Length: 339
Figure 1 (cartoon, rainbow, N blue to C red):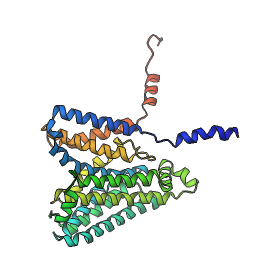
Figure 2 (figure 1 turned 180 degrees about the vertical axis):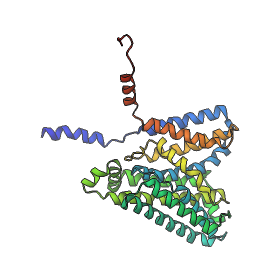
Figure 3 (figure 1 turned 90 degrees about the horizontal axis):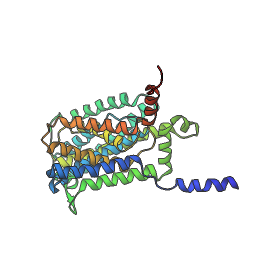
């Protein structure tokens, strides 16, 4: 009886929502960034600039959510460029401007995404291949399909897709609503379901999860399938937003996708993920990109800024600074002690 009485408060306390360090850090950083933009480069936070930034932030947020699911299983998905580009090519080339052929093209893009996800999941989950090697090979296959369908030439998307993905509702870009829907879906699935809690447990410690009877292979494989579906959604939206996208539009989303996941606080070693913080990080990185460009800095500097953001995220959430300080203090000679 005493033991049960002692454990009950702990159980109640553990059910309270916990605000992650990544959420606080990236949230405060985003607010400060907008303040700095307003002071240094007011044009980067004007109404038109923000409306132009939000659709691309939404696309990055959706891609980041997909990457987050893979990172939660201790992997990295390098097939993002091919997955996003293939979705763009399919929904822009297959309909060839005919609105009535858009839905079959979307279904075809989803079928390709599921196939790519199953391939990645089989190689990583079943065969035990390194996720970097496996997804890099899948990326090459996806780009082969991109070239086979498009021949490397751009084509305008349908007016229907342009209206859906690039239009406004109540003055807000429609792509933002798609990003919020993806965020809600991922959050509910990962945080509010039994399968989601098992998913995080598998990512945190696969050996322990396997010992307790969890289906480690299934969870690891499905992470890639859900990720590919999110990449596909992002590619479809991007095709409508840009109206005439290139066949290699997805190349720009590989590094930022990893950066927003890390900035959101999700560990590259796997385990617990933070969807809301990941989406906020996508907004932060998109506005940072716009701020840098508004200063007249060369476009090539954008990649350096993204790499710096990734390095900061790794330093904040991955490095054990307490252990590092203790090791440094232990190694440094004390003042006044004899040699």
